[in-house]
Length: 335
Ligand code: ASP
Image (cartoon, rainbow, N blue to C red; front, side, top):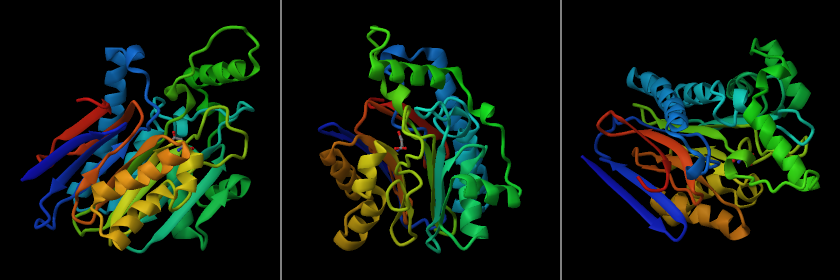
């Protein structure tokens, strides 16, 4: 039995799905491809199909693991890897460019069972930053590694490094050019700089058959960011958090505000300390970032397998494994 509620509160669109708590074997999986969606007016049916296929491929990768009894941790890592390899999303292959024309990627993963976590930031040659984040969690005594040191660690752990050229995509390059011309006003042209030009991120949250939760997030950050800038995605408690006692969360949006509002940990805290439901906690945490001036969204799952996918932007690439075993995939606010 399933209860699906979808509501719009002010500018917040929220979907929450309740799975019956008495079925402890319920697995749950939600993925997002970022709140920086292409404007609906520029979205062609072909493009929409490609984005939906990307989300579906990620869901399939995670679902295969969960249905065969695998861990939530393996499921979120593998779902995120699929999105990192897909040039449509701002992570791995499709990462946006810094103001210096480089790609600097951030990622984090957290195991809700042990509260172990791993994160990397400002890596420039790692094909799958989420796998490096997991290696930091499992193979080092650290939680967070950055830049050259993180890449050295990748090398010594057999994690694929690629030439920086691998991350070049014409769409992201054009977005940087647009951003630079907009800031310098050089061309005299009037550019419309959309959410999709600016940012994006990918993430996954899951609950496995043993009731373990995990969260993973990976991003190229924001177009035209200063080299060395780090967003919320790799910061445990800001863009990524998981705790078996409460929930697993992966965020997307204006990182500076999500950091200041500690959005992912706030969802956990509101559930634990205030006894809020997953949906209420997600809504309140997102509103905290919104009040500071930041927009975006998040995906979350609680210990009973309930899920929430709120966002206050015009859209968020997103999908989840429905209770009937079918994937539900959406981009914009209205269905
Ligand atoms: N949160 C990401 C960052 O600030 C960007 C995004 O999700 O759009 O790096």
